[in-house]
Image (cartoon, rainbow, N blue to C red):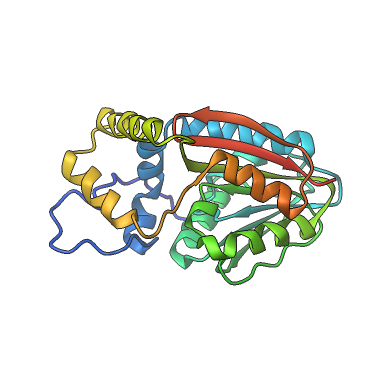
Length: 248
């Protein structure tokens, strides 16, 4: 019987750090990730529900569903409830600690479908085959910009015709004035979820060189340049957005 995953409170940046290092998905982060993302990302639960609904409508019999940057498996658990049980799920992450948590959570959720968890660095290479749905939920923003176009093309090539990429990202506003305002609203969201000024400041510093967002228009252009057909915005909250792109 799998051991139960306890959701621990995110206190990674609670105490003052003399020299804040770049953010990493370490064991410490893996232990508190579910609390961190639920408190840090606005409408995270709704993003997950929408992703699952879209995936269920576009999944094709005899294909695979990929979750790139699957972390602790929340997206796969959401999709599991409404996608046919014979569809194989593939979760990919570069953090072994995340995948260990993910495997326990999938077993707790009663996963009976075939699934595979793979360790891979999306900056380098990932193998995608016979996919009708690929999800990048708050993941592409952590891929170095120089490698993003290659990753998107790899996804396109691994999708069957009519397959989709579901992309959820933190974004920059199209205008710098709104960018400042949206960031202000976002930090207010964090304050409402009981993050202190020190936690907000230190995490911002840790993410500065790691999480590099694009504008919504830049993400759309990247998808179209890679060869995707129609791109539709299905979610938008200030500096967060959700896109779905269809392979012709």
